[in-house]
Amino acid sequence: MLPLVTIYNAVSLDGRITGFNADVELYYELASKWNVDAVLMGSNTVLTGFGVKPGETLPESEDAFQPRVRDPEDDMPLLVVPDSRGQIRVWNEILKMPYIKDVLVLCSRSTPQEYLDFLDERYIHYLVVGYQHVDLENALEELNTKFGVKKVRVDSGGVLNGILLRKGLVDELHLLIHPELVGGTAINSIFQESKLEGGETLTREETPIKLSLEGVEKIKDDIIYLRYRIFNGMFK
Image (cartoon, rainbow, N blue to C red; front, side, top):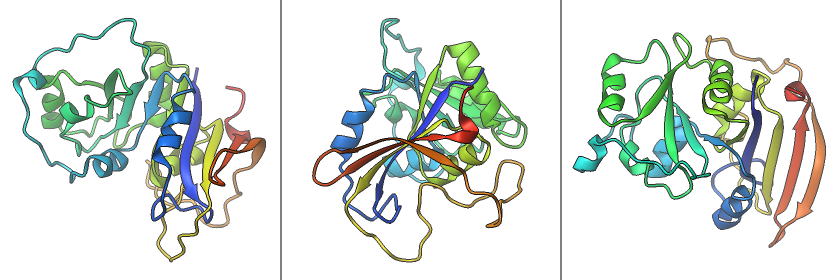
């Protein structure tokens, strides 16, 4: 059984996810009302957010190598990050984020043993799903059955969004449309054309993903909140 998956992004009027003045406070204010069990975030998004390069480490205290005690009544979401290549090495800093209760790293059988040891030494939980790459469908099923995750919010960039959408794993798409135009020719949208886990790439001739508008609301400062259902991800 797959959980309900919702992609959530702040975008400019021309669909870009960077290069404009996003209202971050509003973004997280709305997100905090969703009552989700997990937040799925791409490894590139995490690296960018913490301003570190792949594989970069930061100074760690002794506490980073000690088991963490979690409040069983904590209803904050679990942060889930696919990182089969072992790029993220700043989990101690990530755990300080105020709106998560813990982290779970999604790995594959191709993940270097050295990285799994790195996670074990820091008591970072991980799940091995997939061979050469993380099997996101299997991972979502495991999140449901093993961790009781029924609702997932995807806070990520176009690459992870694109894979989830192409795999038919998304139920809803929520967008905060900001009244700004970025322009330019760089590809930086919520749905990027990139390779799937197996290496195949969708072409421009592929059938577009159909959506159904479920709600539209003017929030503040001319920001529009759009909510869509996605046909290929409905009724799991």
